[in-house]
Amino acid sequence: MSAIIYHNPRCTKSRLTLAILEEKGVDFQVIKYLDDTPSAQELKVLLGELDLDARSLMRTFEAPYKANNLDDESLSEDDLIQAMVDNPILIERPIVKTDKGTVIGRPPENVLAII
Image (cartoon, rainbow, N blue to C red; front, side, top):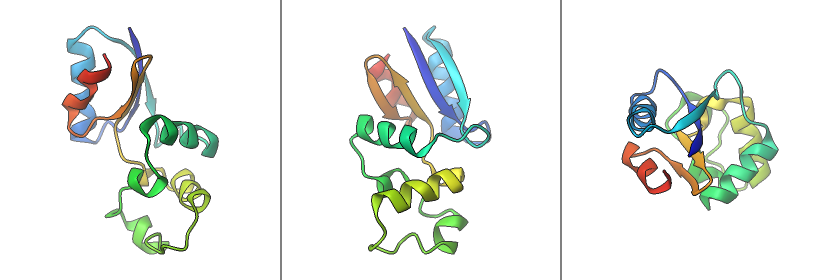
């Protein structure tokens, strides 16, 4: 079993999810998405795997959400995805992907369904 985790080391939920992967002996690749931001195409793939729309993956309480008026319902999926590329702090975390599926580690135990 191998996994990819889109991780923010400053996030408690992300660290707890990472700890579960370690505890279960999962081989994983860490992507620190604030430094290595997924492209718009990569986000579209993740959204499809998560079965979410872009707004559902966004951290709506972050300053860039409010500063860029991202609550505007007229914004398209592409607009919202681009906002996450431009401001990766807006991406909900952690996202974990294995060959069994993709989940958001909120709560961290969500990862147990795909490992």
